[in-house]
Image 1: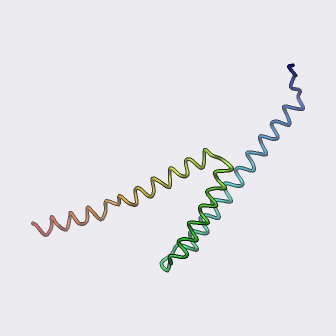
Image 2: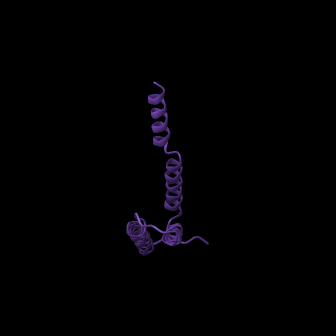
Image 3: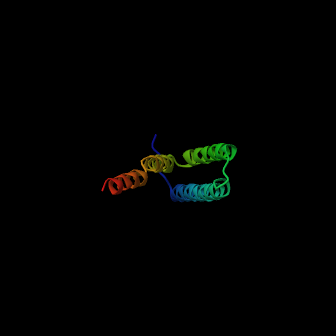
Amino acid sequence: MATCIGEKDKNETAFIKFTRTLVKSFTLLVVVVIAISIKNNMINENTTLFSTALFIIVMTILFTIVGVVDSYVYSNLVLGVGLAIGLQIMDWRKVTEAAASTIENGL
């Protein structure tokens, strides 16, 4: 049986969409601010293994919150973290410095 969507239903649907977008945006911004704050407070020159493990646990919880709120943002966030770790592992500055010193010593 087909029903007709009235104006009231359209307005409620628009309001619900607006509310969902508002809650998603607020949650994502709060998670980003908390993540930056935790990173600045926990990762410094005197970082211990315990603080690193605690940072990983807290960030896992925050990433889980992002994943529940918006899977698209979560996928892109995980992709970005993977790229950052990969680029950190492939830090070519050390290799080029070693090659440059070898060339200088050889000449």
